Amino acid sequence: MSNPAVVPPTPKLNEMPEWDLSDLYPGQDSAELTADLDRALADSNAFAAAYQGKVAGLSGAEFGAAIAAFEGIGEILGRLMSYAQLVHAGNVSDPERGRFFQGVHEKVTDISTRTLFFTLEINRLEAAALEAKLSDPTAARYRPWLRDVRAFREHELSDDLEKLLREKEVTGRAAWVRLFDQTLAGFRFAVDGVNLTLTETLHRLSDPIRAKRQAAGQAIGRVLGENQPLLGLITNVLAKDKSIEDDWRRYPHSLAARNLSNHVEDEVVEALVSAVSSSYADLAHRYYALKAKWLKLDRLEYWDRNAPLPGDDDRTYSWPEAVEIVQGAYRAFSPELAAVGQRFFDHAWIDVPARPGKASGAFAHPTVPSAHPYLLLNFLGKARDVATLAHELGHGVHQVLAAGQGPLMADTPLTLAETASVFGEMLTFQALLKAESNPNRRRILLAGKGEDMLNTVVRQIAFHQFEKAVHAERRAGELSAERLGDIWMDVQTRSLGPSLHFSEEYRSFWAYIPHFVHSPFYVYAYAFGDCLVNSLYGVYESGAEGFEAKYLDLLRAGGTLRHKELLAPFGLNAADPAFWKKGVDVLSGFITRLEEFQQID
Image 1 (cartoon, helix red, strand yellow):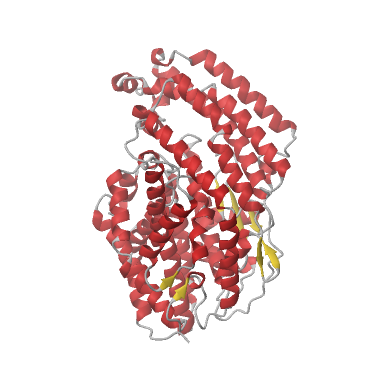
Image 2 (cartoon, helix red, strand yellow):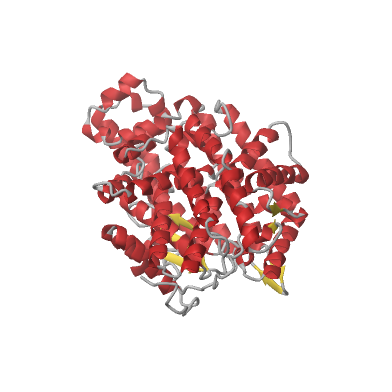
């Protein structure tokens, strides 16, 4: 494994791989893609003819065969949509790619409405009737999927209304999401005479030169502020759209649908939020007061929050170095896990470089079990980019290992989907810390990890509180850009503390957070995953027997087990409020260790 303390940087940032999507389809106009659209349409029509209105009368064996056929259609549609989404993500500013994505989305939506009746009829079955069908082993295999389908039983509408909502998705919510993505991808931020993308400008908030950080922060605030009418409209429309559907589906509160899809109880989420928010002073307030002293500032400006610390050499990592660091950490924990990860580097499964028009941030897309996941990065060679690689690779290996559960049961809820990613980050950090002998570099590594955890735990719970307040107030009427800014500034001030000063332009920073638009109430899953992994890693460090095998089994389970069942082999229980305090205490312990250093030179 590369040691950043002794190996001189040899960045080769231009020599970075891009993904090859031909494992899904040879091209946008390929005969294979057209054939799959035709096959999915024919199969869906045949499925409807065979089963619509007849599910209640199926024998157990026939029911199992019907689920398998439904799963097969979903596999084709999933491959089509995955390809269209990945093509679009490669350059969301390209109108041709946008039209291709929209066209595939519309066709897939049309086809999927033809099989929508199936889960609705399943949910109209009485429990005893369903249980009788599950006496057949073919049907019984799908018991975890049926459990999750049945969880939404009380919130489903009539067949016609469900079909209407499905068909209008492409011109409703999905269209607003597309507008948001294209708008952000098209933004250019004038910084020091250069027009930068959002990803490049956010990256400058970590620049060692304070004036450059300030210029980047103010450029972001200026552009977002100028575009608040549009971005505020998108936010208001999507919040209202969600409240209308929540009311029709009889959800008791705005988080209910997300918690149900995450297979997590309301009280567990409330315990997490309470544990983190009640610790704001012990976590973020304490750390940023410490950082202000290190930077010799009375107060940090918001653009100083991610500033490198004094003595940080601002090392740039080449792509090969980043790969070796991450894979070395994975390999030290589990050769099997690293072998799965190696597939992403041996094949063109990762799109690494930052490019104009490319979707910002990073993600892992599972595609379908018959193919493989793809990772998107915007790698700029910093330590945080190495951590991002570790994070997304964790998602990727999780998705590979869970693929054996099949299309209907491979996906994990968001709360557990962050387990492998955050665990991979922790493995990489601990490996770097262990390899580092320079005391000052060790302090900087500790501080960097502490900041990453603050961003994952404190910042994401603050995002959650912002989102919750916006959705609550939207029910009384449209929120002005001014009011959105008020809510944003309130949660940022409360969570990050008095050592940070937020200038007026920071009021618009809520507008670039994609999760608010893409996946309402997603964000608490990051804090859930981080605190969960803190507890899980503690079990690993204690030398628990068979940890590696149990951990790999957890990943292979995909969506078949709930959090209580997955954590039980490790002696953990997320329903216990003490569980979350244990996770928060790990972060508090990082800050205590850092306070022991009076100065970072």
